[in-house]
Image (cartoon, rainbow, N blue to C red):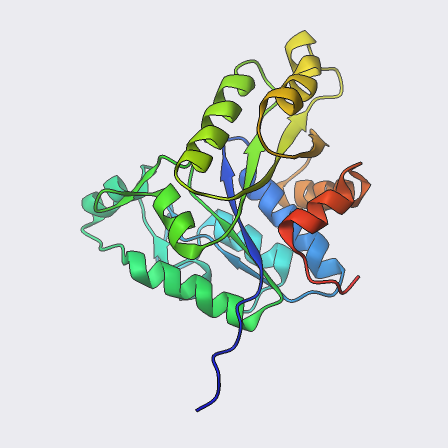
Amino acid sequence: MSAEQPLAPGIFVTGTDTGVGKTLVAAALARHLRDQGLRVGVMKPAETGVVDPAQEGPDAALLRWAADCRAPLDDVAPVRLRRPLAPSLAADKDKAFIDFGGLVESSRRLRREHDFVIVEGAGGLMVPLAGGLLMADLALAMKLPMLVVCRPHLGTINHSLLTVFCAQTLGLSVAGFLINGMPAHPDEAMSEAPHTLASLVPADLFGVLDEVAGGDRDKVVALARQIPELPTYRILRRNLAWPDKF
C-alpha cells in the first residue's frame, strides 16, 4: 500500500469584519501564485447569499477564476446557501446540513492535488458555521495558518487586535495580516493605522494594499500586481511557506 500523498501548504484567509475585501485579497494572492507557475487550489467552504445554490456563488467563482482552479465544485464551494445570513442560520432556513468533517476533507483533497491552497472563510472568526462550531473551529480543524485582512478605517485597531488575540487564544497560527483598501488620500486615522497596528498587533504586518477601482476581476488583477511590490514580500513568502518555484 502506497503512502498517502503529502499535504501542500496553504492559508486560511479571514477578515476583521464583513466587507474588508478578503475575497479580493485571497483571489489576488491566488492570481499572483498562479502567474508564478504554481498549481493553486482555492476553497470557499461556505458561501451564503447564493442566488442559485446549484452553481458557485460569486466569491467562489472569483477565486476559481483567479487561480484557474479546475477542482470539483463540491471541493471548491461545498456549501452554497440562498439567504445572506451566517452559514448556520442560512442552513437552518434552507433545511440544509453542513458537514463539518466533509469540509475538512475537501481541504485535504485540494492540498493533495495542488502546490498551494487558499481557503477563504465567511466573515470573521466568530461567525457561526454549524452545530455550535465557528469559522475559527474550521481553521483549527484544517490546520492552516491564518492571513488576516484588515481595513484602514477608524476602528480597525480594535477589530484587528481582537481578531489576532482571539485567534492566538484559540491556538490558531497567525501568519500575518494585511491592510486592504488604503485610499489615495487617507484621513488622519487611516494614515496612522499601519504604524499603530504594526506596533500593537502580535503578528507580522505584510503591508498595505491600495484601494483599486473597476469590477471585481479588474480589482484582483490590480491587487495581484501590488503583492510582489510589498516591502515585506520575502517575509510574506516565508510565513506562508510558498513552494520555492520562483
